[in-house]
Image (cartoon, rainbow, N blue to C red):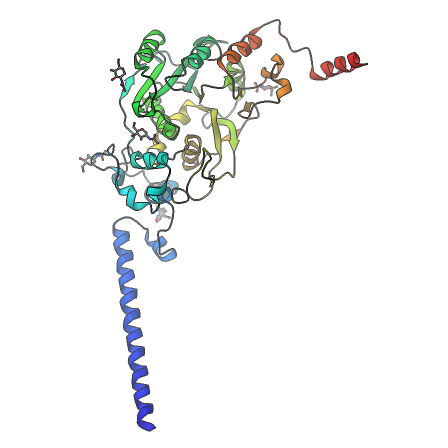
Length: 412
Ligand SMILES: *[C@@H]1O[C@H](CO)[C@@H](O)[C@H](O)[C@H]1NC(C)=O
Ligand SMILES: *[C@@H]1O[C@H](CO)[C@@H](O)[C@H](O)[C@H]1NC(C)=O
Ligand SMILES: *[C@@H]1O[C@H](CO)[C@@H](O)[C@H](O)[C@H]1NC(C)=O
Ligand SMILES: *[C@@H]1O[C@H](CO)[C@@H](O)[C@H](O)[C@H]1NC(C)=O
Ligand SMILES: *[C@@H]1O[C@H](CO)[C@@H](O)[C@H](O)[C@H]1NC(C)=O
């Protein structure tokens, strides 16, 4: 009895010692791991103790590193790091434009992601594509308003309608307007007919086309945004204001000028159809679907990509900050992410109708006089509405209530 009690005590002590050794080994191992990760720049010491595992989605993980190293010091007023102007060091692989095979193992469900995500992720490190067609003299006289229109090679009719209507370059109400169309290339793999000679001809004729050599796809629109910002900074930095939008919208350019003549805070101006408190769609078949392994969290306030208006000065700041914001597959959300890092919030303006106006007003010329943008509109609509708002005789005397009264009278 006594001896067996001793044995049990001995066994118990031995087990306790084992557990203690195990705990010590495990703790020091994970501490070593943590320090190792810290050294490799994966975690800040603060975050290591707060949140041991790096469990965030891929985009968040990439951006966290940038935010930790660049924005925290910037936010509390220290000097920007010496390489602030350059590509962040960890993104500088020797050939950033080769497919980045690391992503295939860094995202657990990479192989089951839709093809467009795989394409996006493999090439998201590359931001330099050759300019096939330049428009070097476009801003030789500084524009008051630069209209930058996202288009694709095949949409010649839309561009021509814009040139003949709201994007007519020249002097309008005493202000210089310059229009530029932003194109990528039509990849042969996407089965587009080869329009490259046509685009070349068009560019030579109008001098308002910028075309880069990358695949013009929906998920590459963010690439279009950053390439445009870089071009803007080097070739059109003196523009006072920039409107950037799609080629299927109608824009009331005169009204933009009237609005800009009125605004007080010009430096930080950024207006559009602002969407707040949105987040990624998780339904697979949607155009805006984003998998959880790619992004988690809510979106900062952003202006719908149909069109928004900002100051040239802010355009230059967007260009600089965009170099430190990881590309995101949805371009207007990306711009919101850049604004957030500049400490700015885009402002909602009711004149941007990216979800159209009520059907009963669409054929009413008066409905367009006080709007800035309506989406969507065909090339024919653009020309028709432009003639309406430029007709000096088409004054808006007929209020909708009068019309209603007339109809009521008739039905009696
Ligand atoms: C700036 O903020 C970071 C992170 O919060 C902190 O580590 C650093 O000491 C701060 N620097 C100054 C100069 O306040
Ligand atoms: C990128 O890395 C290469 C090789 O380490 C180096 O020569 C080059 O200067 C770096 N580029 C930038 C922009 O930092
Ligand atoms: C399209 O045509 C141009 C000129 O004819 C040619 O140089 C180019 O290689 C073609 N592009 C493709 C993708 O076939
Ligand atoms: C974006 O363009 C690059 C260059 O043409 C291409 O390799 C990549 O697959 C494109 N990405 C998407 C999502 O289409
Ligand atoms: C400009 O300001 C005036 C006075 O506040 C206002 O009545 C007018 O609607 C404004 N115009 C535009 C285009 O915003």
